[in-house]
Length: 427
Image 1 (cartoon, rainbow, N blue to C red):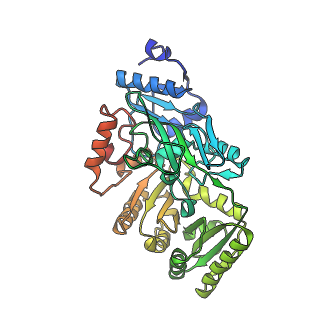
Image 2 (cartoon, one colour):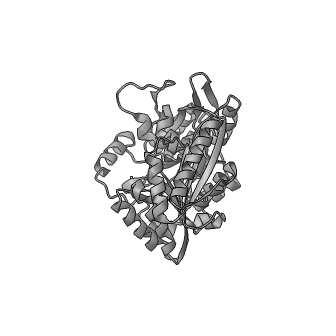
């Protein structure tokens, strides 16, 4: 379809951009996407019209926010890129009910600033946090370290409206914490990578900003860190973040040697001091090194080390395995001599992130994926060069749910036009 196509240019509340703006051109290039159109709906109705036209014209579409995660998932041959960047309005903030409803293109950073004025926040810490939109975060289930206390993305979503592949608008949930029994569309859309519909609006839980916070770091040998992390999981302590860090991260930040267990508490001053002292006692009994790094500074430094690729050849991964296997997994990363590997694992869930660069990365990923699968887990490529994703399946899913996934995809998108090939099993 050409840019001057009458059917496309006559749509209301829709902007078509050409030539592509420089930031978009860079992100599209990195994702190896060559769309004929880059489309910015300005209302939910405009988004509905665009998807209805795409269905009518059999145009394959990729839906995104500000494009920071366009390359995540499998290779996707597409015709149009539809951005929700201009669907960025705050629809409702029920301060007393601790809920907020926004359009999908609202950047998380902007929303956090607005919520801060009322003493509230959303406990999400995704990749590309300065650009990530709420819709993109939900579509990729990208939560971050705060899941230790607040859960993942799907635990925060109370309601959603989406535009189906045929352009019709559907809704689920609402502005209340309790949901009635039935089909949970919010959880189905979370982590679907845009393959089931275009997320239009989202209602989220908000939380009061804690009055005080402190962070404590334990470093040392694998066995001792494993004991400390297990003790923390089984204790009555209530950290908001607790991450295991690989030796590479500890060394790069000059925090010591060995593995690290970084723990953050947020509450009233007396509570966090008591809990911090308890963790220090755990570390001292295990002959671990105990330090108190600057709170905001240390978390801000660690985040991009595993989430943001440093160059076009670097690979980032999301993975999961049994929490009890996490310390040994991170300790093994230093045994691969041909690549620099950073790893971070959330202590309670066993979910984590990797950053790899160097030689033999595909062989290393295959080895690490096998270790994860042997420990009831997975390993998924996120950012990676196209040639890497041609050599190894980005998802590597070994489970038995693919027939059900394909059936759901068929029900939501029978013509397979929404992000085709992006999801597990080529869905």
